[in-house]
Length: 257
Image (cartoon, rainbow, N blue to C red; front, side):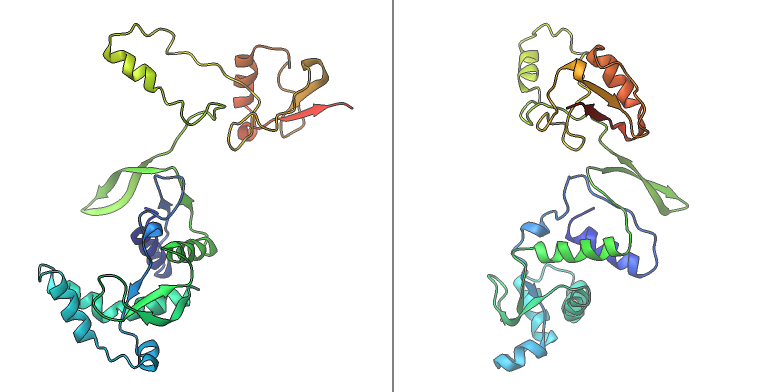
């Protein structure tokens, strides 16, 4: 999972020798962490003493535990407060930068909040992403974990779902809302099993923007091996199905002067 917790876990597991694959159901990394304020609380004499701030892990624990109305697990709170600074060092070792001065972020109760150089929570995400990429960890976006595979009471894998939709020239707003609404009124839906297919479009977005618009007679389609694989004056579905059988589903358009 590509939020702050998942990226931290993936980074730690990688450091400890695990073979890691990160899956994220969204098309971007960050989760809620990238939207957070980004302040990180930790007792830090290196930054606090020059500012004449006296602090301790015991005070940090007391304020954290009591600030949660003593509902937290005391053992876990102690683990958090005793190890918060080592987390700062761990992140800094991976290239993350914090400002030199600490402050009291809203609700922190004491001046031990560390402000990242990067805005909001982006510094954490960029740091993890850079580390994982440097260690060749596969990051699969638009991929949702659906089920854990458990053998002998151990998680040994996961079943994931990746999108297999054909790229479209449609606006992102074309999500079939009108069709769904009409079904409530018992509309007679016909032809729902068919779509129009087009062999030309941006290979990353499906957009027609940038398409070489020239007459059919003046162009040929070739695959990555330089081979012509379909007649350019064929039906759109025939040309598209032929394209789907080519390497990387990619064609080049060749036109003369």
